[in-house]
Amino acid sequence: AQRVTQPEKLLSVFKGAPVELKCNYSYSGSPELFWYVQYSRQRLQLLLRHISRESIKGFTADLNKGETSFHLKKPFAQEEDSAMYYCALKRGGNTPLVFGKGTRLSVIA
Amino acid sequence: EPEVTQTPSHQVTQMGQEVILRCVPISNHLYFYWYRQILGQKVEFLVSFYNNEISEKSEIFDDQFSVERPDGSNFTLKIRSTKLEDSAMYFCASKASDYGYTFGSGTRLTVV
Image (cartoon, rainbow over all chains, first blue to last red; front, side, top):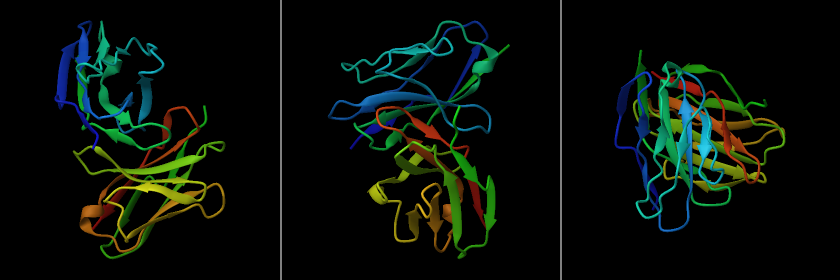
């Protein structure tokens, strides 16, 4: 069975500090990994997906198959980055996403 | 930007009552999903729907749940006899092929 682990429930950083939100997964096949963000009481929004290799709002994430990780990083945190961040895995095709428990990022001014 | 729309945003119901949660997916999307999030817990998959039938369901999606696409645009989740533990945020999502999932803003269901 597939599983996504986000070890930190809450992460607090100062504005301008680097951010790393951890995500590890377990899946025997070739997964597709995503990061979703949920701002206060809003919908889940796709932040990025590993196959796109893009940078959205300054965030990047690299899939490390050896470490089965997909950590989300940003070099300089902004206050508007404060939100819940969910890492998610898809087995393939149009199968449903499997989510981690989420990490609440709080950026302190 | 197209959105997935969910109504109502908040529903309060008495235990044992039936509820229908409604979703309007993005018009050219073909794959539809329901997820739920119990307060303080992770987002959990319930069911996926494609070509007018269930394509996959989780162990949570038991006989008290059903889904349908009654009119080609709405996608509904029915909970037949609600229990206290059904209280959660329910998210609808839709997907075109080979792209990410677009989520609705959710319906907060409170069973009292």
